[in-house]
Image (tube, rainbow, N blue to C red; front, side, top):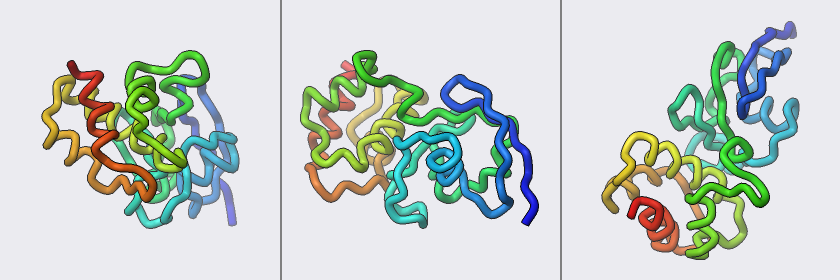
Length: 153
């Protein structure tokens, strides 16, 4: 199977990547680039663990073909804050205990980040709608909502 060369800006860094036509963006981010933030939860776009921000919009990277991302700007959890340089949103997740195992946390934070980019002062209903399709099996969604609300006040 032939490869397609794409160029994409990932977390602010330009990458030229040879991708197979059937590879999804999640595969390329994890296996080619080496970013472990996006997770493969379901592979069908139902859980949100693979969320990334693509050209300013939240997308499920397991559903997006990498070949469609030529010329795109992609932001993963690694692109918004790591280590001692956490964003206010990430700090709020820690403060409110809005995670347990952490598997869904990158996708949840990116969903919240995308919402706050569109609506800096969302309502609780806005937050609930933005988190639709982001599954967590460990923690209470209320803590996640509280963390997001904390950064809007």
